[in-house]
Image 1 (cartoon, rainbow, N blue to C red):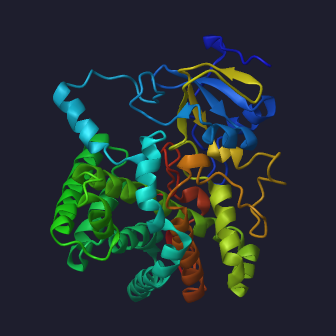
Image 2 (tube, helix red, strand yellow):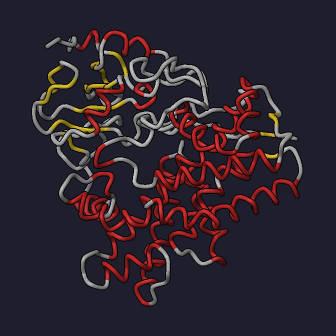
Length: 414
C-alpha cells in the first residue's frame, strides 16, 4: 500500500478551473500520472481525496461502504462553513430535500428509485421520442423564422430539456412559457446564489401546486402516475414527490442545456467527423457517447462521497469519515481506459465512460438525456446544413469556473 502525502503544505487546492473548452483542467493529467488518488484542500478548508483514474472512479462510485448522504456530519463540502442555520431554517431545508434520491443511501435510495425507474426505461423513453422530435422541430422552425444570427444556448440548448420535462411532468401547455422562463432563469443566475435560490423556491412552489392538482385529478403523466401508484396509497408524501420533480427538473435540465450547445461547438470544430455523422445518421448514437466522454461537463458534480468505513482504493487507505470527489472528466480521459483519450473520435466505443456515474446512483435520466441529444444534433445539422459559428472559439464566453461546464452563449449563423 502506498502513502499519499497528507502534509497540508503539500496539498493542492480544489476545484481546479478549466482553461480550454475542450480539455479538463491540466492538473488532472499530472495527478493521473502520479497515482489514482490525490489529497487536496477545498475552499472550505476541508481536506479530501480526488479519484482521477477510470477503474478507481468506478470502484468508488459503486462501493457499498461509500455514502452520498450530504446530511451526514463532516460530509465533504466545497463551500466555506457559514453560520449555523436556525431550527426553522434547518426544518425548511429538510423539507426541501425530501425526495432528492441523489443524496440518499441504500436502502432508502432503492425505495425511491424503484418508484421512478419505469418512467426512465428504454421503452418509456422510446415512446417519448416522437414528442421530443416535435419539440426540437418546433424550436428549429423558430430559429429559421428568426434568421441568423441566433444564440443557440437561448433558442435551443435551454428550451429543449425544459419543454421535454414539461411533457413528462404534466405541465399544462398554457403554463409552458412560465415554467420554461423560470428554469432558464435558474441557470442564468447560477453565479448569484441568492437570486437563484429565490427562483428555485418559486419553482418548488409551482411544482407543489402542480402535485396538489394531480392529487385531486391525476393525469397520464409522470406526476399523475406517481400520485395514483404511491401518493394515494400512502407510500409517498406530497413533499417527497415535489422534491423528486424538482430534482428531475434541475439535474436533467442543467446538464443537457449545456451539453447541447457544447456538443454543437465540438462537432463544428471537427468538420470531417460532422460530415460523416450527417451522411450516416446511424453514427449519431456513438457520436453522443463520445461527446459525453469528451466534454464531461459535470466533472465532479454529484460525484461527492464520504467513506463510511476504512476502505482501500487504488492501494491507498481512505479512512472512515474522509471525503472523496470522483473526477469524471479525468476518468474519461484516462489513458488506461481509452486509446488516445484527448482525441475526439465519433467512431470510438465509449459507452464505458462515467459521464452518468456508476453503481446504484448511476444517472436515472441517462436514457432521456441520450434521446434528447441524439434528436437535437441529428435534427439541427440536417435542417440547417450550413450552420457555422459567428465568433472564433476564443471569443465565446465559457463557464470555466462553474460546476456545470458549457458556453454562456453560442452565436451561430448559416
